Image (cartoon, one colour):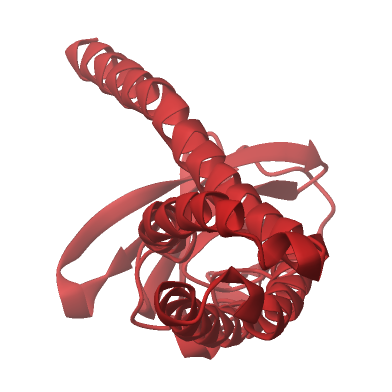
Length: 271
């Protein structure tokens, strides 16, 4: 009872933390999008402005305002982008291992190019005037469209590399009992297990019970029970979790009768 109560309290605490963190990530996403809209919107506004207006002295003030806004938006975009990457990919260690990460790096390089062009535009604004901004602003805007295209493509990709897997399918026998076991997909984490029992002599009489557990001797991980339910005559299914890779020992205790048990063992390799 005390263990169940402790598990319940822990689950509620985890759920509470996740619920509190949700508005923070929503705010981060909103800040990221708002900064991009201001930056790209200002670029297109300057590009579409007529040359005669840009040549006027009064054009310097809105151009300076946009330059200041861009200097604020760019750090916001970079900072919130790094936070989003850390959240989705779990860090930057394997960022090149997925198409998502490679597209993200390409997007980052384009943003760096936009920042460099922004520095050139700022110099031109201070030394040559607003009327000389059109080419650099147009180039920035085009690169910005490419960035948006890459961002749209990134959405369809997975930020984490797929886990290696190796399905397990074996017949384990002992004491005249044959257990046909399949485990899929066979990777670190949650898996599905199916067990079909053939009693001694190949009879179709139903067995009394089936209990399973797994251990990882190499890492001194103690026995963990397997959740099994009866699907039909001598057919059991359930879920099995492997918290790490290695050669796991699978043990099945078959209750042939109410007073007679047979244990079968096998080794399950999780890559």
